[in-house]
Amino acid sequence: MDIFKEEKHRTILEATNEELLELKDKAKDKLWKPIYHIYPQYGLLNDPNGLAYFNGKYHVFHQWYPFGVTHGMKHWAHLESEDLVSWNRLPVAIIPTEKYESHGAYSGNSIEINEELYLYYTGNIKFDKNNRSANQCLAIMNKDGEIKKFENNPIIEGVPNGYTGHVRDPKVFKLKENYYMILGAQRVNETGTFIMYKSIDGIKWELIGELELENFPKEFGYMWECPDYVKIDDKDVLIFSPQGIDKEGNKYNNIFNVIYAIGKLDIDNLKFKVDSYEELDKGFDFYAPQSFKGKDGQALLFAWAGMGEFKYPTDKKLWAHCLTFPRELSISNDKLIQKPVKEILKLSKLEVSENGIVNKKEIIANDNNTYYLKVNLTLNESNNFGINLCSSNEERLELNFNRENNSVSLNRNKMKHRFIEEYGLTREAELNIDKNIDIEVIVDNSIVEIFINGGKITMSTRVFPLEKSTGIEIYADNEIRYNYTKHVLNSGILD
Ligand code: FRU
Image 1: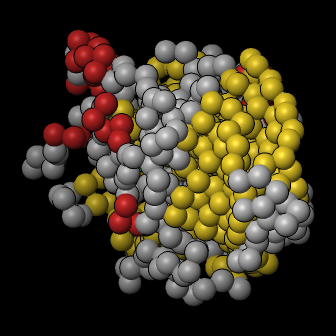
Image 2: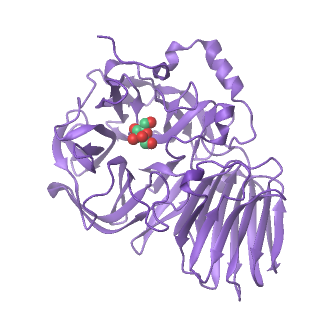
Image 3: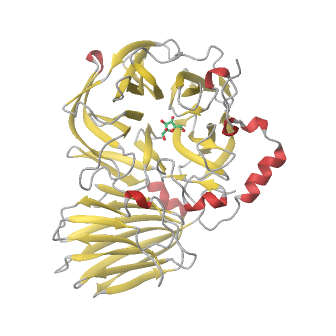
């Protein structure tokens, strides 16, 4: 019987060089392309995969569909860097050419074993439009950077009894002398969960069961994607991307959301005792994050700055999405703290610092949309104040603070190019507003990442400003004192 395949299930090997050059050429418009965030030259990028510091270099892989801006046949694209900010594109790392991955090489992570980098991923299988299965697979990169699929793939064939075909996104980690694989899964009753496998060599895997989350809602959505586990100080952190969570006030306002849970992992009893859990980012375009350990053992994280299968304004330019800038994670008072990695300053080509007083509104800069801005506000009597980014006389992205409601909101409803309007154009988070507020902002043409009060709250959004909308304004309903440092940034990815 022929395998079910649609037009979107071609691999890059089935294209001629000319076709690929044409795709690249059609997507060459620079207007909304980031200069220091990882984005695809053409086609669609989604989840970060296989993140590692290995053999002296950082490696980022990501989901990539080359032939358009749909979620088609996923490949693993590959970039490397010595410092997390200057990236080189490398040849595609995993191309789904085999039967066990007939409909895509889906997400997964990597871990160093015997001085090689083991890349775990899901071989996606579609029987028809509505029926699927999954195989867990392995590819190995050696110290010369050569990547080979494991000859006895898949390492885990099919899905265990009790689960639908939605079992994917392996995260492999080592605890004591064993390797563990945590997978996102959907039970046959259509609830989301994690299932776990164990191995002594990273190759032969044994199913050990579901990971039970204690002090956590019994039912939480219909599918949990992209599980992630990281130890920070003496705390265990689980990060995942559940689908099917209902909106609760200002929580879970995106179609799909990302959760982190801090607690204690008891691997022998397959339990995770949750001390606290929360949405990881309070913005619009943030999904499928993955953590990994950097050069100095620090916990780092990248996410897909995208959401669902929505149309985005760059679709007509034949490229879609980017990754977030890498963030360093830490924990304070059982909350996850996220900060842009300090290496961002390596890209600084111009630094301007100023301070002053705003009464109503002031434009503090207006020249480009590729910068890192740190602002400190001293509020005095102000209750309603904020910062407008990507502003001009026609539009602005508003970051608004409201002391009466103790909240911060990010509003993209004053922007000309709208997208995903059906999920609302404002995101809000609770924030205890005291006398001072610290704000760090990363702007890179079409992505804005905001870190409030030292990274206690982050808000990420894509934004597609008009060419002239490069203003930064501070506004307030009363006198407010500010000081800021703005670093204009160099490009980190050369195409
Ligand atoms: C999350 C996700 C993963 C899957 C991948 C496919 O965005 O749906 O669960 O492995 O994307 O591209």
